[in-house]
Image 1: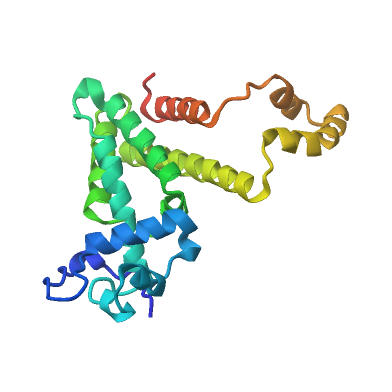
Image 2: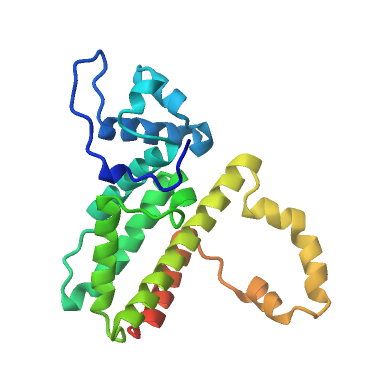
Length: 239
């Protein structure tokens, strides 16, 4: 049974043993990430993973109790990438640089491993690298002006995480839609543009009309940066 909150981190890794194919949790997670990067989470199963590693499926259960534990290992590998890319010394003048670096590294990791966007913000991520990223983010925000206590810090962390997760999921969804349908923004405008023009010409949606006609067409990276700056200013009181 795939217990939703089985905790792989509380069980020591099995001791190495003589076998035709030596295994470790790191090796298993790396192979699973390769499969998920290629085929998404729907294409990942313990049986397929075992076949990729050249072992019987039952060997994997010495290392991961179920698919949820496998996903936890994979997620923590991505958090290790984020921690490495976003490593900035947390000093009072540098809290903002730390938060920006981690947010940008999270976006980059999510675009490289699109399946990560499906898992971030879901079940609690309690692996050592996930906790390290959370600690660095929280410690940095705790030094921001306008964050004057634990309540402010909780709100700041929660709002920042909500923005990064939402922005990443939206960008990944748009990329997937384009790949699956071949419909880019220009094609979408050609297809639905006449309908939208007719609706806006009714005069019932003046603000949406301003957004469509006068709003800047930003690329995803610029949209992320502007949104991140706005959210960070709002939750910390600093610009």
